[in-house]
Image 1 (cartoon, helix red, strand yellow):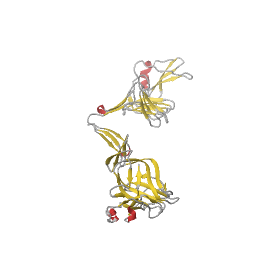
Image 2 (cartoon, rainbow, N blue to C red):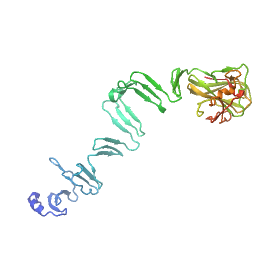
Image 3 (spheres, helix red, strand yellow):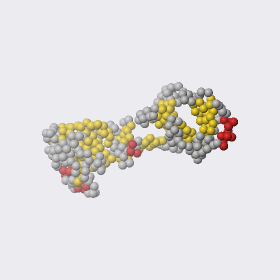
Image 4 (tube, helix red, strand yellow):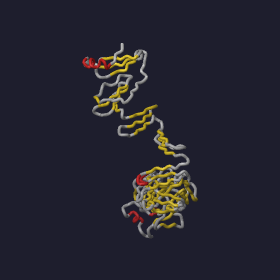
Length: 407
C-alpha cells in the first residue's frame, strides 16, 4: 500500500519520539522506499537486490547548519554544514570529519591539495617527477625530477625568460645566449663557494672577488689574491726560489743540504706575481745513491702545502725536474721548504745574506721565524702535509738554499 506523506504530516509530528524511528514510508514500484524519520531525516532505501543509480535534484540542495553528527558508517560518506566552522565537513568510511573546502586529488601515490586559503600543493609519489606543461606547440614545461633537479624547458623556437621584481630578468634566447638584466641602480651578483663572487654594479662596474688565497684566471692572465690584495700575473711566467732581496747566486756550489736526515728547512719568501706552475727544477752537484730531495711552498701559518715537487731523485748529478699537475700559486708570502732523506746530497745553491759581516741571526730578530726548521719531518723525500712548530736557525749553513726554478 502506498501513502502520500503530505496527507499524514500532522499526525506524524504528533507521533514524533526521541528515537530515530520511521514515521512514514513511500514505496515506488519494486525499486525501493523513501522513508521519513522522526529525527527529521529521510532515507532512500532500495529493496533487496535493487540499487539506486542516482539522485536528481531539480533546483538546489540546501544544508542547514548543525553540530557534528556521528561519523559515517563503514562504506558510506556523510556531509553536513558545521555551525561553528561555517564549512561543509565530510566523513568518509567511518573517518573523522574534515573540511570539504580543502580539495585533494590523489592517484598512484601522488596528490594535489588546494587549501581553504587557496594554496596549491603538489606532492608526487616517491621517485616520480612533477611536470607542469604550458600551452602552445613544442615542449614547454617545468619539470621537477624525483632527485630534486629543476628544469625549465621551452620549445626550440621560443626563448625562456624568468622575470623578477623591478624589471629584473634572466633570458635564454633560441640560440642559447643568456642575458641577465637588473633593475636600475642595483647590482647583479653571481655567488660561488666560500664567499667568492662576480658582481656587476648599477653603474656598470664589475667586481670579481675570489676566496682567500684564490685566483681569477682569464686567457693568458691570472689575478691572484692574498690577504685581500690582488696582483696581476702571467700563466706563462716563472720564478726563481728562494728569490727576494739580498739573494745572490754563488759561482761555486754551496752546501745547500740538510743538517739531519728528513729535516725540513724553511725560509719565508715573497712571490710578487701569481703563477701557474707545472715544473720544478733544481741541480744536484753531489749525489748519493737511493736518496731524495723535495721542494715545496707552504702558507705562512704552515698549515697548507701550496706547492709540492714530490720526491726527486738525488742519486745522480745534473738538473732534475719534477713535472706536476698545474698548480696556481697566488702572489703573497710563503714558507719556501727544502728537505732530503740524507745529509750527503748537495744542490746548486744561493746564499741569503743581508750584507757581508752582518750576523745571520738578524733575519729572525723580530720574534717571528723567517728562516729555520720545521718540527714535522719528511719521509723518503716527501714533504709533510703541515710544518708544525718552527724553530729559528741562525747558522751560516741555514742561509744556504737550493737554487730552484718554478714555471
